[in-house]
Image (cartoon, rainbow, N blue to C red; front, side, top):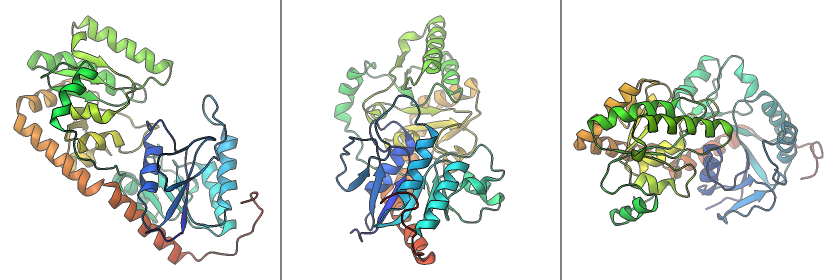
Length: 386
């Protein structure tokens, strides 16, 4: 099992609630390492349910709002000078300040750095200065190709991964529907995304009356309310569906304890996002739905097109409620096609996005960087005590 060599994960705080793709990815990778041990960063007082994970309360006490940039930069530089760490794994967007601090601290400590980009960069112009590691791991082929085009040769594609579970038994689905007040026997179309950052929720709301004119369906919007902007957008959508006379066909669930339960009673998940600003390249929530055998419809734009090209999702033009409605109606009217799409989605998750395979690939990367980058003599005391 573990060789005793430690990987130090530098990321946002890895702790509940598990509602962000970036920290879910760190947790999943770190929990599934076999030949390395893992240390992850948390706030003070956090106890994780995974006993194999070491924690470092480097984020200090919880505070309201975003963590100040000074604390983020300082903690990354200070933490790298630790005895017993073999590899530093930065799981962070392209960021000039963070990259420079991590590069300098790692060089002084003689530690190799692997940098996983958790978001597709807005621009790749001069991106080399915002990358801290070699290699740089991209979560999608689209991002990898963009970096290679900018001359970043040390890029690797390793997709995100999720835990694969046995699907929820059919006998439990009626109780789940009653729990969330979803009508029995009605096909469910779910959107588990954001109100902000894209026009996906608006596109879905505009498609609803078109879908309901053609077939029976119930819509679930599982969108967290993070702030006033989200609340205002939800209120606008509620007004629109009330004006359309379809409010009884829509459930607004906001944050739920188990998305897996909702996927278990859903036939289709839709994700017509026209923008991925501030989001992971390939949302892990899509993979979770596909793992539960839910047919998937996404916006036909990179990097979501990687799911379409694999035959695991239907692609529709972004900002096109008519196109979205046509795709959903066709799937609901042709159960064989819906079933076939769900089958391909589940198989793709099993072959490409199983976290056990993903974690094993990262361990191979750690082996490679340790073999190719001999450690220099560390200069202790530069960033504070270990």
